[in-house]
Amino acid sequence: MKRLLLTLPLLASLAACEQLGIEDPAKIAAAKEAEGKAVGSACRHASRAIEDCYLLNPKALKAAVFTGWKEMDEYMRENKLEGVAPVVPRGPDGKALPPPEPAESHAAEVKPASSKPAAKEAGKDASKSK
Image (cartoon, rainbow, N blue to C red):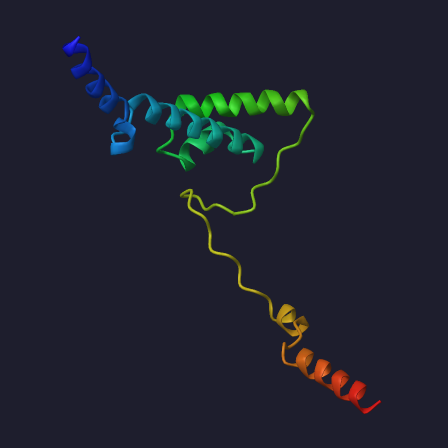
């Protein structure tokens, strides 16, 4: 009976290892697997080839990336969905290219912010004089 009373606190303390910051290897592996599947499905949705996906995400597990890519491919074919073109252009080295400089004609279209408060004040002055 005394042995049982001594082992219960020991078992309770071992059950709380997560609270101490000790990571469970099974949970880490599951998280990496899920992340790889998410990366693969995102690559397929962005109409990227699986090889490009591997190149752009070297730290992701290749098997998980392939599984996610394949699952998304099947889903998109079943539902007759088209892929979305990637928004961020990539260079030949796989890194994102810098955004293009804004054109001067676009800058001329932007109205200055100072004209709006002046118009509001003029409207307030006109309503007071009535």
